Amino acid sequence: MASTSSKARAGNDPVIPSQLRSRTHNPDETYVAICEKQGIKPNAAVRVALNNEFVKVLEIFPDQFEVSELPALGEILKHDTKIEYVKMPNCQLGATLCYVFAGVLKTNRTIKKLDFSYNRLSPVASKELLRAVADNPVIEHIRLRGNHLTEHICQEIAGELERNITLKHLDITNNDMDMSGVVLLINAMPECDVEYEGNFWAAEIANSISHGLGIVLSFIGGYYLIKEASRPVHPTIYLVSCWIFLSSLVALYTCSTLAHSFHRMKITGRMFVILDHSCIAVLIAGSYTPFSWVNLGHTFAGPALGSAEWILAVFAIVLSFQGKKYAKYELIVFLLMGWAAAVPFRELMACMQMDGVYLLALGGAFYTFGVGFYLAGRTKPMLHAVWHFMVLSGSISHYFCVLWYARPCTTMPSAIPLDDPLAGRFIDL
Image 1 (cartoon, helix red, strand yellow):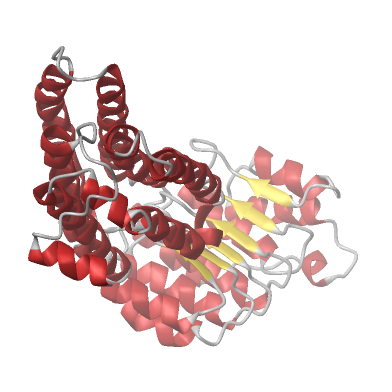
Image 2 (tube, one colour):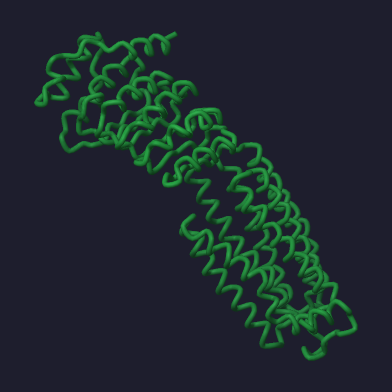
């Protein structure tokens, strides 16, 4: 009832004091006069912002502002002031906030940024606010994070937002939207950075479970791998390389699971996304370590392959910390790392049983074909879970290859196993 009443009050403009129309009016005095006419107490935070000519940000903290105070604030902001950024997150002001600022944006030409995150905005009221944004020629940044908006809002407002050419950033994260509506917004505003993480809870649950399973399998498989590698018949280098491989597996699956588990926590989630991408490079290099150190350790190709993998891994990690800016190049580096074993392929076939070569190639195929699902997951989030299972399949293939076939070479690299027909075809290439 309070929200409806406030909405009605906001819709009917109160009597505007004559000084509001004057170009020389004092914003603070005008605000106090409006509050007196409406029978409410002036808000201290608003007065501080209006009184200080150097303050460009109006920041309202939770529990510092009531819904009944919104009409007075809206009335003073309808006319150009010095305020450029209105920041009111977590204030739980509801639909009235949208209706009041929809009116403000129709005339105000100084406000460039709005932060209404976690204010329990209704879908209908949010639509009115976004319509006002569409016609405002100066607004640049809007945060509507965590307001339980729906994909229908995107579908209805996308065409209108297309008119706005000044909007640079729109944050609609954690609104439980569907991807179809989000895609409409992105296509309608190609020059605008639309943040939409945290809207696909079903896909994120699937992602967390899939790589959570990877953590469990890594520990179970790790027990048997280390048990085998610790046998006296194996060289120490095999044990060390197995530890590196297992550590890279656990690191990847842990960071990936945490990245998707914390998808609704912006800073924490992004931190784990960076670590997740970094661990992809670590896993690729870690997967090749047993083969380059053990199977090819006595050849020039082994140390060369191992060194190249870890150098590229460091380069990929640096790219990962740059965020989305170099995502394309990061993916290219991953693919180069993944198929680097094709360079010393002759030596590898001479130093590994062909079943091991098949397992190694199978794992690479899982990872490579999975990239298609990874890219498709950007527009269809559930396909990202398929990418996760492809990664899981690839690492399982490489695990058994390390367990069964990562052994010191007993033949010289020139002894190519041409008796295997598939190997013969590879050599012909």
